[in-house]
Amino acid sequence: MIKENLDIIRATVPSNVTLIAVSKTKPVSDLQEAYDAGQRIFGENKALEMRDKHQVLPEDIQWHFIGHLQTNKIKYIASFVTLIHAIDSLSLLEAVDKEAAKNNRVIDCLLQFHIAQEDTKFGLDIDEARAMLESESFKNLNNVNICGVMGMATFTDNAAQIRDEFKNLKNIFETLKEDYFKGNDSFKEISMGMSDDYPIAIEEGATMVRVGSKIFGARNYNI
Ligand SMILES: *Cc1c(COP(=O)(O)O)cnc(C)c1O
Image 1 (cartoon, rainbow, N blue to C red):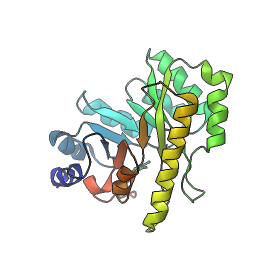
Image 2: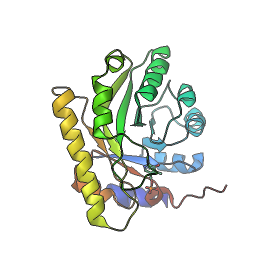
Image 3: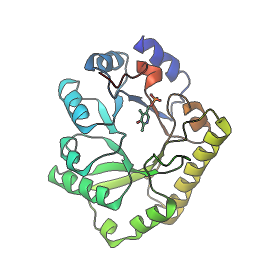
Image 4: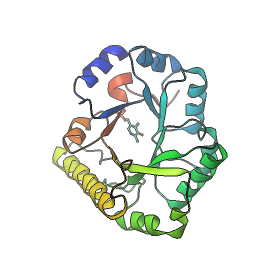
């Protein structure tokens, strides 16, 4: 089932867009099945869960942390995480930098923007991002590398609204690129789109899509 689902999704994701298989809450056997079907990039949103899965699954998996990261949990993933998608404050970025330094690494990160109409979703606005990128503290961070932006659209059936929110994120990306990352080739990622809206996200310029339930089936949070 997972292999079939992956084949269907892959057929709709262009080769220049990275497909992240969001495996949160799913058992290791499901990830192994996706791995056997060729998937190498997985997304998780709990640090301990990601650490535990990393310990038992093949070494060549790239682990993307896609959720809200608590500073006291960074230490569990700092030695191996490939990309942290949801940086939404300078203090979080500083904490990631510190743990990355302890591991002699530079950790790639995305800045999360609040593009949805809901209050509940984390994320920066453009002014907060500017303040962060212009701060002295930011300039002193040597063990994090900002590679782009991430956002989540409103949970709605209104496709036009979702499209507008993705356009907004793309604009934010272009603005930051122009003002702070010109000539910096590693600032190139726009992580947007989930199971229900990733085709729109791709049309609006996503370079990474985060797809969970369309690959692994619905999640059960009660187990
Ligand atoms: C759970 C989650 C996803 C995947 O959601 P699906 O609707 O199952 O595809 C994507 N991004 C983030 C940040 C998530 O927490």
